[in-house]
Image (tube, rainbow, N blue to C red; front, side, top):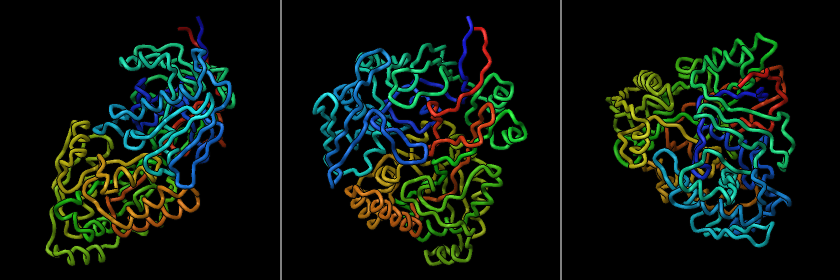
Amino acid sequence: MMNSAVTIVQPRLRLEDPHDCTDANDILAVFDAIYDGLVRYGRDGGFVPGLAAEWRADPEARHWTFTLRDGLTFHDGSPCDAEAVCLSLRRMARPDKGYTLGAPGVWNQYLGDAMIEAADRLTLDIRLSRPIADLLDILVYGYVVAPSALARYESGDTKMPVGTGPYRVTEVIDGQEIRLERFENWHGERPANAAIRFRLEPDAQKRLTLLQSGEAQVANSLDFRASKELEARGDCTRVVFLAPVSIIYLFNAASGPLSDPRIRRALNLAVDRKALIEQIVHGAARPLTGFVGPAHFGSDPTTDEGPDLDEARRLLAEAGYSDGLVLEVDCPTRLPDEAQALTKAVADQVSAIGVSLNIHLHEDREAYAHGVRLKKVRDMCVFDSSPLSTFRVLAEKIDARVAGSWWLGYHNEAVEQLLDVARQTSDDAARESIYRQAYRHLQDDPAWLYLYNPLRVTGLAGSHPDWRMRRDGVLDVAALPALAYAERSI
């Protein structure tokens, strides 16, 4: 038998529970191919209709109403109505769901006490206990599963998922490959490619080779330098995009030297971000000058002017450390994979202001994340920050009143007051202005050591100079151009 499909190779391939929480762009690419939420990320930012044709919120953003498209069906042919959507959102909101490394109940903190009800077949009401003007940041991950499949999902069997998305799963091969075909009853613009297959290939060089040989038509997460050879070819396209994830060091602001904002500020002034980017990731990043990157709503980045060692030394002396300071640093051996080299380079740079780093390595990344969640951090630790939601980053990581999984003692009352106002400001332009104020506060009084946003690369077969990655850094397979593929026997 011959099988004709666009092949997408990527470093991870798992059919996880869609009601857990992940920021892995390759896992989200699979989710977005199979499932819909009420809204989807727009290609140029913001949100566009998903299962909901339209939505509205009351002036305080406490009561939200969504009107579904008529005629929606799941891949198994069953109807997708408001009650079906409610079932998935209620499941997502349970305290045992929304699990990510070290942190269960991510969605429960927002939706756990909400009333999620079907007013009629096509109308869904969400009544929140607290205003959330950025509720769409959460609901974009509210993947809707066919009610007929939920019992199977509860037993942990997510191998053959049933959603409403642009592609339906036809076969799963031993965790190595997922085969899908276009769902002709999808509500959106008809995808250009009739069939796709996601294929696991952990090695970046092999992914590049598969693309160049024609065995794959899309290669995710290519090496930044090695992939430059695609630019010399006329038969492939190299797409470079700024990932919304931020590479940072979390500061233990609860106790020790980094409870002093002057020392946190001094460290941010001492690092040369551009030099770190060239030395550690060979140019594959852009400097990060605040708590979120330029892809985030309401960010207000400034030009990176480089280190100011004199001001950094002055702040250290003012804080009582004119004779030097030793900081204890926790560092994983992966995620980010450059963590060890980065920490050594940061240590070399901050030595110029009299700061020494004593480094403690952690090989078990999940245990490391649990340690951060339990606040078992020395003075600072390497981490990354996501998602593409300014509201969620503030609420989950900055707000001392929440004391979330990745919060380590930081407190800034002015930022918390701005967040409270933003929560109930439905007007997007007004809310964006509020977040810009919070951004500037967090530059003056940094919660973390801000370093960079990575540049990532996806390769496509053929010449597609106008195609670009979606702003959240997730491959939208429904928006791929028509890609030529070679038939092969299976």
